[in-house]
Length: 171
Image (tube, rainbow, N blue to C red; front, side):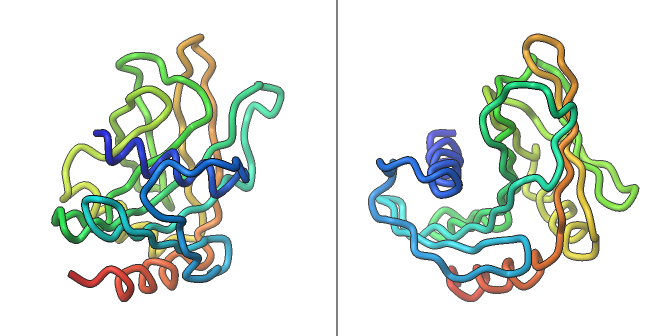
């Protein structure tokens, strides 16, 4: 869980230009691919590669929240490939559902704080396969205050971005 939090923190930092980084080395950009960016860095636990994007639309748009992002991460030294996660920009309602929908296919994520992850590696693989084929994705969650939000992401470029981290983070 600590590594997941570090990756989510890194992604948030990269997205929103906070000066201090919370990992062992500065992430290197591997390129932009449509609406997705690819990065790699070296942590104590080995090389980490991830792709990330931010929502194109956030509803309701009058809700005050921190920036949101969606990530797919590889940590080959830990045998982790295509780990799906989201930073939502608020603390999730405890036990509240978090859903990802891609072209009519729905998936559930497990919330923790302001992040959420798939339950198993098999779930991660199913979500990533769907992302690579889709055009848009919606992430819906409920804040600790009970506000339901829906973030819409473009999937333009995600397949190429994931191909790039596949290459950069070969085991």
